[in-house]
Structure formats: structure tokens, C-alpha cells
Length: 225
Image (cartoon, rainbow, N blue to C red; front, side, top):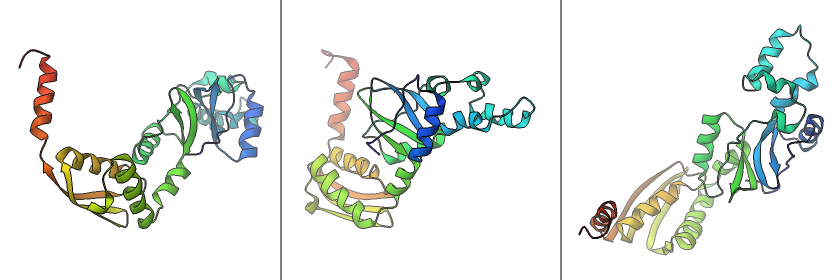
């Protein structure tokens, strides 16, 4: 994500929004009030003002209504708050690149404000995702070993065999528990650039039955066993 985010307030005139979009060469920006993301305003929300259409341009008007989400009232917008799409589709900093890509496709957006504890901390664009997935196998393997295994999961990467070939990750070796093996698999899949994971990790302790008993005890409440 990009941490230097261009934002506007809800009362910012659309002319100023258009100028910022042009000067910064971006297609949209968050609309914020005291760090809180209220919505997103994009070039599609303001391009009709720049075109200066008249009532005779019915075909253009219909297209603009579609771009405005089918809401004709937004065609009378004068400020970022009037024109913005709200609520904004946002994502948390630790979300996977795959989840971000899925959100963009499903919600038809080109950018996602990144929000932590209710406040804007960055913005993620389609270009950021493309760059993330265009990583070398060496970069992916280094992140898996140094960040995922060592720093996040406290697993010695030297005890496992990690191989990456065209984004396909192969994991082999032995970890302490079945839970750890499942967590390693899940975290590796979240690394940007990873296409798929084949894991043959073994474990010294199969803690599945212990987890099952604990879940059952929690479901029935205390004092039942």
C-alpha cells in the first residue's frame, strides 16, 4: 500500500477535487473527516462537470448516471461529500493481497483505503497489487523464511524445506504440532505473489483431539465435564 495518501474533506469543491486528481495523476481519493474515512470520490464522479453536458445529451447523461451508481441526485453534486461513494469499501493492513484483489473485483473498485482502528493509514491500488504479484521466487522465499516463519510464527526456517517455483510454494519438514502445520500453510498463502501452496509438513504432536475437546467444552459451558 501507499502510506502517503491524498485526501479531501467532505466540503471540498469538486473543482478542487478535479485539480488534485489531475495534478497527482490519480483516479480517486478518500474523503476524510478527522482521519475517519467517509467515502471515496473518483474521476467518474466528477467527469460530467468537466464535460459541460446539456439536456440534449441524453446518451451521455445515461452513462453518467450509471457511473454515479444509478443515483441521479449525485449529478447535482457540488462537493466531494455530495459526489462520493459511501460507505467506502476499506481493508485492514494485515489483510492478504488475495482478499484485496477479491474485494476490488466483487465491489468494482480500483482502490481500497487501508484502515486501522477506524483511521486511514494508507491506500491500496490495483497497481500495488499487480506489483505485489510480480515478485521473484527469491523475494517470495525470503519473505516466507524471514518474516512468516521466523518473525511471525517463531519457527526456525532452517528446520523446514521451503521452495518456490513460479509462485508455487512447496513446504516440507517437521513442526511441533498439527496446529502449527495448519497455521504455516495458511500464513504462507497470504504472502503476495504466492500462487498456490503444496504442504507435506509433518508434526510431532497431533493436537486435533485436544482442540476438539476444548471446543466442545466451550460450547457446553463450564461444569458440564
